[in-house]
Image (cartoon, rainbow, N blue to C red):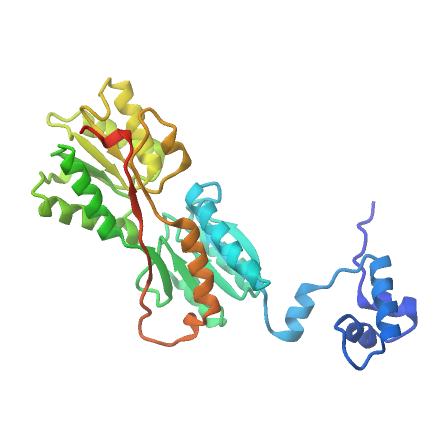
Length: 340
């Protein structure tokens, strides 16, 4: 069965025996076209199921009302909330949102950027994949005049507006909370160190240990923990040590969940013997037993601020460096770290 052909302004013009240019002007409510003709064109367009060709309009005006968004995992609660925040603000200014998912793949990320460049989006809002290795693809978008705004997982070397958390402040607050609950040997499940937020969290964690005079052991820091399986493997290694940690602070909730599962399998009491804290405030953190202490990142606000940065034209400034927009995270204390 042949695919039905899309109705064009030429079909409407033939139906009414007028020029395509007149149809185009009538649909745009141009003053040069009379009311009777406009009404005829609109009724005929409705009858023929005419839909405006957005790409053709884009070519003629040179402007786009579509924002491209690239996220590592669309089914991740944090990224879903960021997208919700983006759409809230975009909708108010009649912009549309085109969402791409990298599934943590750098190759996919490059393909997503290429797709969005070809779509001539008005802006690219991106959070980097765990395996990102360079920003040449994003520089390419900027060469085409497409502004790039980074959020959460960003690359400081790429001169763009960044929307991020105050990682140092919240990590210090978290370590202080663990210390006040009597934990003295705190381990860290760190994310991939090629991403600045995970470097920042690890650096802040080490500073906080020194600040509160807690034990620092290099083997207590486990790298590249960004999945539940990674969290499980790291926790098994840590909790099998001769002197195991008495608390685990994970750079992502999904890793904290893996650690909690291992603790249960090893009959280690949480929070009595082991405290566990995550990062991101995923919905399941309230439902585990015990419920998981975590960090709320303000994901919806992060999405809103990303679009506002574009709307305010901050990316058009050719400053040597743009100060990041800081979203203040909050510590959500739950049962998994409460000894007192």
